[in-house]
Image 1 (tube, protein in one colour):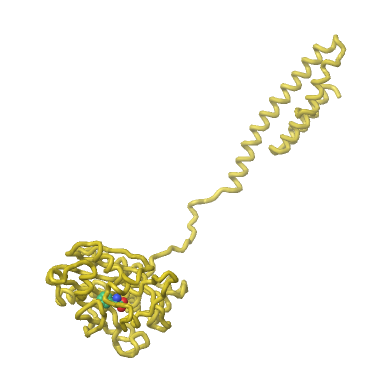
Image 2 (cartoon, rainbow, N blue to C red; image 1 turned 60 degrees about the vertical axis):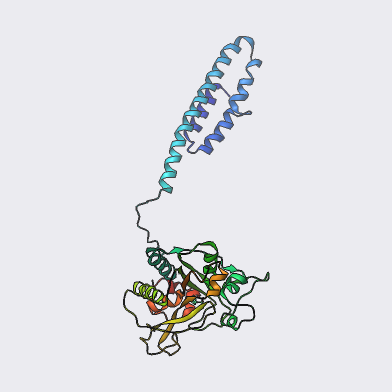
Length: 336
Ligand code: PHE
């Protein structure tokens, strides 16, 4: 084929190339190792001597010309392909997509609120592990092994002899061991009991422990603090009653009940038809417990309380079954 014809064919085919991949095919066809122009330039040396110079020159012009055209076309096609990609894949960030927003769970919300209330009164927030030692959960709280009070809190034991804490009182034990009196602490957390479930009993629930140790702490201090707490949480006056309650780690011990806000004190499944809900067990810290925590009961006294967060949320929002909290039912969570 003449140089002139090769040039024509190449230029026609080039004009028909519309993609980078077909351009690459064309390049290989003409300028690859076995390409038409490449092979042609290898025949220069076989030409008759007198034609060789002119032939060589023309083949070189053909070759350089083809390379230039290929390069230019490549740049052109790159731009075109990028533009069509931008056109087909563009997104509009201004479109208003209705994404559902998450929010805090009512238990977290109330816990935050309680932490705010207490830190504003000078309390420090403590943390503790959910798996506890028998010592921190029971012994240090004046509940030795065979004490009948162990039956008040059925326990999940771990195979290595530890347990899932049955109450946040284990946090006050850690507090006493680590802090020097006077101190005011709260310890929020999740607790576990091996219980049969019903409308007011769960095996997993939340408490906030509170403890104040100072000189001359009395029941009057305890009651004043509990009243402030309830007023701030409910943002209204709620009817409360105080009655004796037994816990081995306080003396005297109390049950602070509030009038059931679900049935307005008339009796329902949550308050077990009594019209009252146990919300805030509390008392003055037993001297044995102070001693166990390394605090001299002759010098210091204290009060402690254990607030049930689930019940608090139930009262606040009129939730009539504690099992909703663990049900994973989104309809429940989305109401708040
Ligand atoms: N830890 C007790 C419970 O969970 C509650 C409590 C705490 C009682 C502090 C008195 C003082 O049952």
